[in-house]
Each structure stands twice: as structure tokens, then as C-alpha cells.
Image 1 (tube, one colour):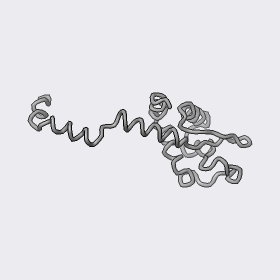
Image 2 (tube, rainbow, N blue to C red; image 1 turned 90 degrees about the horizontal axis):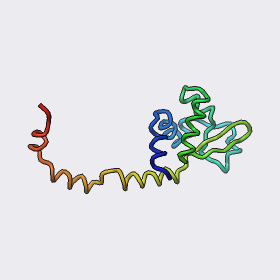
Image 3 (spheres, one colour; image 1 turned 120 degrees about the vertical axis):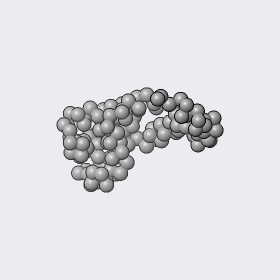
Image 4 (tube, rainbow, N blue to C red; image 1 turned 90 degrees about the vertical axis):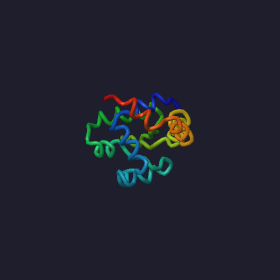
Amino acid sequence: MDPLRILKALSNPHRLSIILWLKHPEREFGVQEHTKALIDFPHSVNVKSIQKRCGVSQSSVSTFMSILENAELVKSRKIDQYTYYRRNEEVIREFGDWYNKEVAIQNDKIEQLLETVTIDSVIKDEPK
């Protein structure tokens, strides 16, 4: 898992939306064409469905998906002439754990921080 690559991949609103939509693919995209063939690759969506939902060109969606795949946020499978994608939950979970440990402020740290700040010091430091 490369956190910087993941953060860059998610910095684009379309790519972030795709990852969020793929969390609930049946609800967001409906039943897919090759549902029976996707038994070993469940919860996946073809590029055409993603393109329709995004409202951008097929080549743009292919670029988006390539970036997400390079960041290991999605996995792909080709069936006939269609490419299907689904979330890589293991990497997403690993990234979430890393983010919570390294970046996010924990509740106990917030309380410690708040103990060091007084209203007077905040008002005094504000520009006039």
C-alpha cells in the first residue's frame, strides 16, 4: 500500500465518487450484463456503467480506472470485450487503518490539545 499514491488517486472528484459508488455497486449501477459469469468476481461493475454514471468519455473513465488500479484501490477482470472493476477492500481497509493511526487526531489527543488552549489566547491571536 502506497498512501501517497492512494491520496493522489482520491484527489480527483470523479475517482473519489467511483470508489464511493463501488461500495454499493448494485444500488449505484444496477445489475450487470455478465452477472452469472461474475460469480468469482462479485460486486464488480463494467466500464460502460461507470462511464454512464460519471457522464464523461469512455477514455476518461479508463484513465480514472487505471489510476485507481495503480493505487491498488480497485481490481479488474476482463470478460469478453468488457472490463469489470470492484473495490480492493483489503487495501482500502489498510489505508483507513494507516490514516487513522498516522494522520487523524485521536479523541484523547483532541482533549489534550483543548486543555492547552484558552478562549483568551485564541481571541488574542486573531488578526484585527
